Image (cartoon, rainbow, N blue to C red):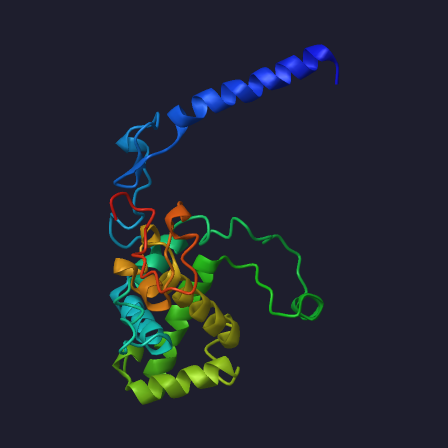
Length: 242
């Protein structure tokens, strides 16, 4: 490093130290005081305009019945539907996730070869298409075997169905891999229960409170030296003023 570079480097450090206090964010209602953005730039909850994909009431009721057996209400927290998991998955299916934006969905595909290579079933259908096809097949199965909508079944009947579905012992239709559909619903129920509330699920941050997760809290300096304590931190969401 020559003399000019050394001076320039030192000047940069001194300048940075001088402006740092002015740039330091001071929290007030989760919004830094010195941000250059106004309230219009703050993140907004996705669930604002009603259902966009799960518009069929029977489909919603059937999915609710499944989600609430996967995550039932108990002394630790609310059920999946009470925590907003149905609203969560509707929002996800209406967006890039539902469209399979992160998936390679171009053919051709030989299912047997692809499944053996990847170790799990592979699909050309998007998550949204898989839900729509799966829910229709689910209702048709219930009508054939129980002469009633799926959500009308008892808790024990639904549990038995889900156990068989998980084991790959249920044939909903040729278009639906029942075991993979079960895994998809279980994954999405978990995601909705533990996601940031800005995505529609985890209402009142019930999932976070249940497991003691502090959420989107950015500053832990006041707690660094408090070891082996139950800090009882109130979770913080990405939703402004939440």
